[in-house]
Length: 280
Ligand code: PAF
Image 1 (tube, protein in one colour):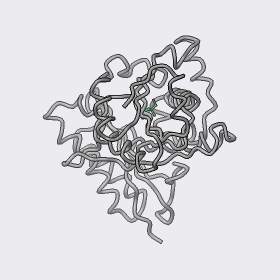
Image 2: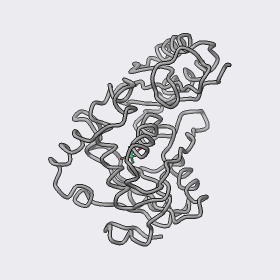
Image 3: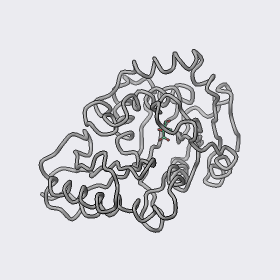
Image 4: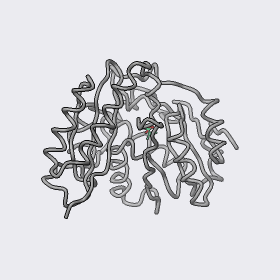
């Protein structure tokens, strides 16, 4: 397996199955790499902690950087290359220009209308779309795989590609299901910030989603989620049921919907989501 820093060395991997990441890889990323492998294309995982998607008070400086371990995990899961570019490769015009370009990025509807991560983390999706578009430009993948754990991000990037007018040819975005720890907590690079005694509280997210799945109406599901999060001492950013495609509010369970939660435990912000049953 190759570790690539120079984009010229990516040329043999055009048409690859791409797994973009910010590193600190865990089994959730591993499952995306294995899924990529199943497409019979060369598999490239990218590792870049993207400054433009972090807000000024977020954890960019302390975000874990574990390239050697990431390379080992990517290789074990079947990647052919890890692309780990420097900030200069990603943003040749410098950090300030990169921020300005992220702010000006034309955002698809799922990044501006739902009032979810877009409301809680202003500027976040400008940075995500900017960095992913740049990674696509450099790698020109045939398929790109993103985890359902970041469900709004998955919808945003799917729309970005659909609205791009074929900028990346016939490239498709494929979702990878969320991988959970044995206790149900969704795997996340940020779980390592949790103290052992916070674990049961963090499980409030998955318990809230399970409660939502038992409800007959979205409004009931939302009340049950809010109550469960409060019982676990979690501060709720949102706990809502939305249309699974548009992420806009819904009034029933006749179409595919998704329950989505973001909640805070001291300084750790956790997100999770679950497909709701369809009742016709
Ligand atoms: O999901 C992530 O790890 C990041 O947001 C992504 C898609 C790699 C862009 O930096």
